[in-house]
Length: 293
Image (tube, rainbow, N blue to C red; front, side, top):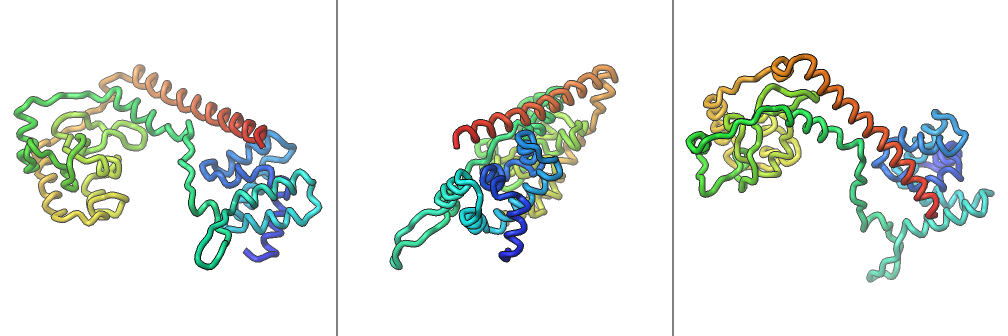
């Protein structure tokens, strides 16, 4: 970012605003609109003005120009409080390091990674899965069915391995997903729709079609990990699918319209409460941040 562009973005943000809300601007766990709303609640800025300020400030930060922007603030006629805070921010961004060539400055961020900030509203998929799993039928297999399943997959009962990659199995995964587009697919929890899996594969696969996922480049997929004999594993799983011949059921129709609609009304109500709770939590956290600086 050249000097002219930096000056323009900093002035559009406002020097005082850039310094005062620097912590929010660099917290990319918050969306632009979430940060803009918090700033708007504390000032007389319009919502659109706040969005513009956030966008410009984050453009400066993403371009690695935070220090240059703060130095501009230091040389400006901003209030003494703003300039003092800018000095503190500059000092917090850099660390001294000794090496064979003497002492030099290194960004603190190069040696630190903040754990992902947990957001209430980011748990909506877990709530959706819970609402679906709570109503999906569960059929427990007998020993003969478990033996037959392992035989088809050519897995020894004394050493149960992941059907997808061959690592040690830690769980049984739904071969065909129970959830898609926030609604049940119609498949249920039964041995013919469950295969031994490791945690890596189960997490990576999610609700993707199993064969498409295995041969694709999703993070931690067997293909992306270059798992050997991948085609052999696919053939075994295809045989397993043929053995299972699993049929979908219409869970909503079996439950009845009234009960089914009420179930999803409860789901929507909880998601709305979570959004409201997230907004309140952000206001509280920002207020605490402001009082501690």
